[in-house]
Structures are given as C-alpha cells and as structure tokens.
Length: 217
Image (cartoon, rainbow, N blue to C red):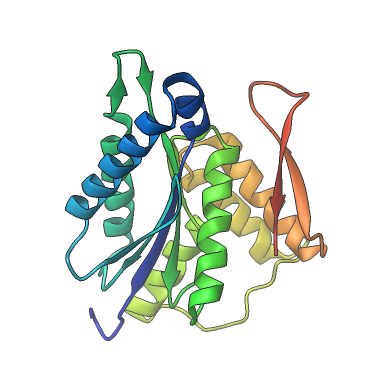
C-alpha cells in the first residue's frame, strides 16, 4: 500500500517457441525445460506471490502489492532474461511473451484482469515476441499517477478517434512505447474497440502475407 493506493499485478507469459523445442529435441527435453522455467520463476518472485502453470508452456503470476508499475516491468524483464538464458545444445534458445494487467487500473475482478493480461500478452507476440506489454501502457501510467498524486479529474475517457483526448493519447503512446510498430498497433486496437470490432488481424513485421488474429473482447 502506497499513498492510500494498493496495486497488484496479474502477469501471464507464454513460451514463444516451445513447439519447435519439442519437435527438435523431443517432449522429454521440453518437459525438463518447463520444469526449469517453473523453478526459475519461483525464485524470481516472492513467497507471497501466486504462480500457476496454466498449460505446458503458459504460466500466470498474481503479484501482490507491487507498489509501482515500474516494479512489474522490472519483474517482466528479469523473467524474459531468465528464459532467454536457457540454451539447449548451444544452438537453441527459448523466448517468451509476457502480458501484464494492473489492479485496480484495469479492473476489479480476476476475470477482467486475466482477460486484459492475455490481451497484452497477445500484443507482445504480435510485435515480435520475446518482450512484455502492460495493457494500455501509456494510459495506465497516466492513470496510476492520477491515483497516486491526485492529479486526475476522474472524467470518463473517450475512445472516439475524433476527440482531442484520443489524439493526445495516440501521441503519448507513440512517445512512450519502445517500439513504433507496437505503438501503432496499440492505437489501431483502441480505434477498433471504439468502432465495435470484436477482433482484428495484425500483419507481422517480417512477412506481410502472414498475420495473427487478436480477439479484442
């Protein structure tokens, strides 16, 4: 708890190239690697955090009382480093995609937070993998500062692309995001949500004839 604000994080991550690992080295090796990732993850997080293995290469972490959003980013970076450090036969390295949702900025219940953490993870995958995303990152940090320092006016935010608020948010996302393509995709997602689309097809950066489907709700 800090300045009257308790924030918690839900972090989900998926191993990007687990199927290739299993195809190349077999499922027994894959199972051992997943066990190693599980052990490394337990060491990275605190005893008060809850870590769940959802499926073979997919995990969820309930990160209690993170204090600052930067702490969630640091944990995600350390997690990615831990996974990418795993090397099999000096030839094959694993990567992961991480998505983060923050309570209460992104929702007040588990299902809503989980859905937004997954949306952030899919965004990380669509933008080159081996990275992390916080759901609606630029706006999240703005809202966190409003909660913490009382600078917000609590007005309802509009997603109308014609509104001044949306234009300012788009500029803020472009300024704050580490990846220009990632920022543009985030802005496009917001526009699609406003227009009522339930899914969007995002083209990959390397091959324009392939795409990934992302469900928006």
